[in-house]
Image 1: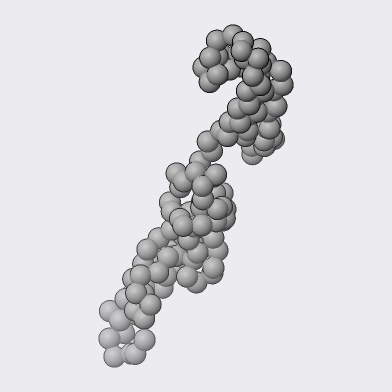
Image 2 (image 1 turned 180 degrees about the vertical axis):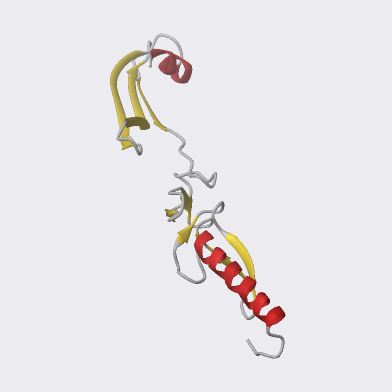
Length: 143
């Protein structure tokens, strides 16, 4: 921490007060992880002035956007990744929230390009496959 004070304010600073805001989270196994969110340094310079520095640590969402600059859009139902409002997607059929990695763009006959979650996409592919089998095996039948 002293190296940070010297880097930001110069040599000879006497720390008066330090405040750190931390975020405590737990992973899937229950192991705690601590991340610094903000740091505030108040120090006394050799000239007698009171210097105050407020640092905000950069945090990024899964989509790559800054958590401080973009609003959180939601958590992907498939993988659990958190995306911003801009990059958050929703399944066209079941309306589940999706990240960019789990979104599947599919051409819809009436709607154009739509986003489907993996399970709805698999169901649509299976349905198209069986409709094609029906057309081949029963050519006189309508769908």
